[in-house]
Length: 212
Image 1 (tube, one colour):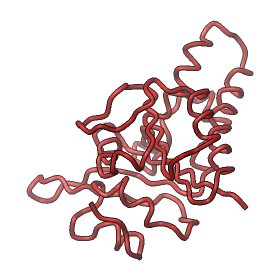
Image 2 (image 1 turned 180 degrees about the vertical axis):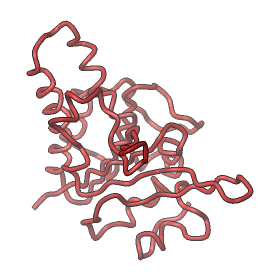
Image 3 (image 1 turned 60 degrees about the horizontal axis):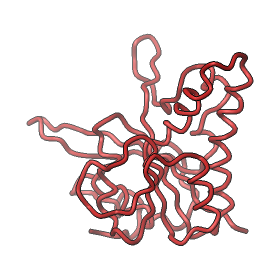
Image 4 (image 1 turned 45 degrees about the horizontal axis):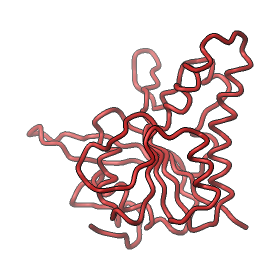
């Protein structure tokens, strides 16, 4: 059975999500830039700029690579919401969620050596003013109340910057859901900069991993 691997990579702005793409070779990854037509570093990646559902869906129907990244993918929801701002009723929120889910479902129907990373901004979940977790930053509660992307994918990674006692940043990443794949090493190039040097992706995944 075909089963591509959709992976959510969550984190606040500046946590290194997009910058970690730099670890790929330019010919091994396809990048969909949904919001910004550029990446936060100089490297000659081939980028589908201002990509929307149509462009992403057409390329994923006949994928020529093993890895694709949808950068700032939460803007797929936001831009459709802007385009439909004059529509009334709650039905459009259901349709917005359906369209985003269709991309994830498309990924799951791909061959099993494909990995598709959805890079998204995160929001804190608070209880009594205490941070108790993280969620995908969407377009508001009308989406959140009926659709949570974290619940429909097999793997979610959270990127953050940890500071030591001297104030020196030490990138890290934490797993927010159980990993359900045997090909974990495939993910290493895309998140290598998110790991502390002393541990690295090998120890995180518990097996050998690619290095740069």
